[in-house]
Length: 162
Image 1 (cartoon, one colour):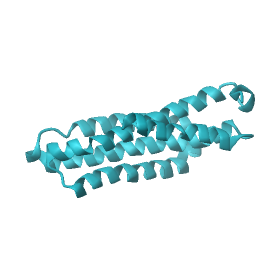
Image 2 (image 1 turned 180 degrees about the vertical axis):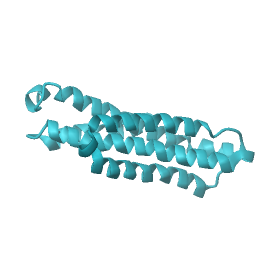
Image 3 (image 1 turned 120 degrees about the vertical axis):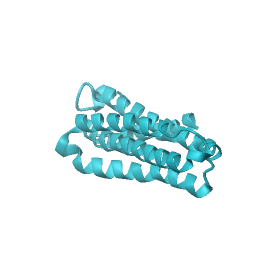
Image 4 (image 1 turned 30 degrees about the vertical axis):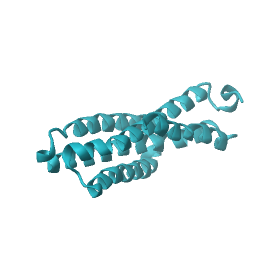
């Protein structure tokens, strides 16, 4: 199928692939964070429960990003949510890199990693809240097909990131 013929705008194909790449990057980020948990545990002396809390922050944040973003996307616009997601990503990097030192600083490191992961996931959920309705709107005659293409990027990103 030719996305130029299926979409309602000449840029539909470009926007689809922009969403595909954003969700691919989110999958890579989740894969990397999941793969680095054991390293964080060794560096900071975290228990399995603490590592589970850090990983769980990623799932919670993702849900909040999708839920809240989905509610407000039509009210504030796609562009503003993309900017918010970008800013959340920057903030999450600074917060995550705030976790330094070793086991003596494990309480502070836990907080940095927990909140860095949460904010990172909010950013990715926000991108998802934009990409889904955008693709569904751009391809009204073949939504399922193009949403499947969009979401194929998530597991691909997890594999690449892992």
